[in-house]
Amino acid sequence: MSEPPVAASPITTSAREYCDALPGGGGLLGLDLGTQTIGTAFCDAGWRIASPGKTLKRGKFGTDKAALEGLIRERGIKGLVIGLPLNMDGSSGPRAQSSRAYARNLAVLGLPILLWDERWSTSGAERDLIAQDMSRAKRAERIDSAAAAVILQGAIDALAGGMF
Image (cartoon, rainbow, N blue to C red; front, side):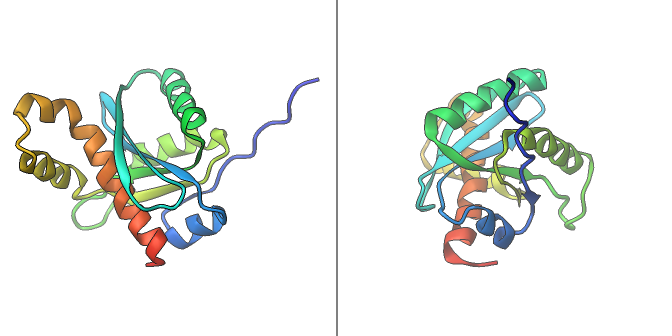
């Protein structure tokens, strides 16, 4: 006998809808989707602080999905926050459409997904790494996971503070 299929998860840009989909809170996984890498970040079940995780080399979707499933199991993740790279005027371009498509593909994991505006995440992460006096080479290694942490922190600040 086979297992029933997992229901697709809700995908939203609304912090309120996302919060409603996670009534008991839970650990979250933040993702910064690049063309060659995926930056990851995690937060605790109480949604207090986001911490950078691993930077994954991006490959075929099946390989990416398997790596993310491993992180989800390992950390007991209850929801995903994916950076949505909007244009500076708030409109969607090809990168935002690509992030939405990636989120739709990840919906099979059965976790709620929040698409979060990431317009300033990389520059904020870069500024933070420079403030830590990190070398250019080290910053290049860590920028994607640091940007994922900035994305996730912005989302959890809105979620925990009820700023919908």
